[in-house]
Length: 327
Image (cartoon, rainbow, N blue to C red; front, side):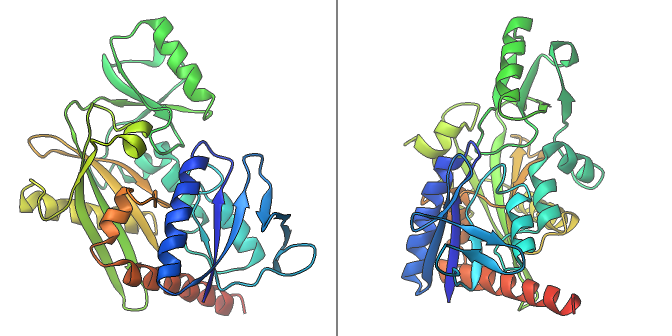
């Protein structure tokens, strides 16, 4: 079985993708899979063993000399042009099986405004409002972030800031994304996360976790996620949340996955107050996969061998079903 990994990419999460791919490559090789790699440069070129990749719809990926033969594509791409439905659309056009949610689920999951609008009547979602400038601010303590973004890049905690300060932050965020989202700052909220794996073959939806992320400050920043030596991840064996709240979170996680028409896997993130009030924050349809990433910790609950066996089977089953439906 040969897995073709796609990594790098155009987004601000380029470096995290490289780190995720290195870890996943190591894990897959240890499990006996053969690996091929396509690296996407920051300017959008696709490279295979240093050669430019030629993409032919309904045929596959080629270099000047040969077709790149593989069984399943695995995008290890975070953020724009990876997690937003773009690369998934490419796989559909080329007609190859791939390990990821589909175009629509990916694009909705990436866009926090649409994601929240879809779910706010079904589950307790953190309030969100798209803003354009300082005059749209109606809270004293709030968070500003890109509507479509990840890894906490471009996320700012704001409290009684001046108009000049706010406008500078909005401009900085708009350099990353066209739209800016405002959310209330839920102080001292706990970061609780779950993984979802859909085992299509065995008709079983696996809910992994919870885990709790213990951070140094109020914000789980990009630097804290990937470089803070004091960051701790508390696994479900040691987490201090009531069983009833955990059960409620699991039910919400299933609702989120099903509402997004999830088919493969994702990570679902919550903010939980000290009195265990729940706020759905966001989903990650291609979560970070570095050695210290939260999803990797969650996946240890079932083991990497079972995880990748399920993900690969999902990709092949979904692709075969599409082939039959298309006649």
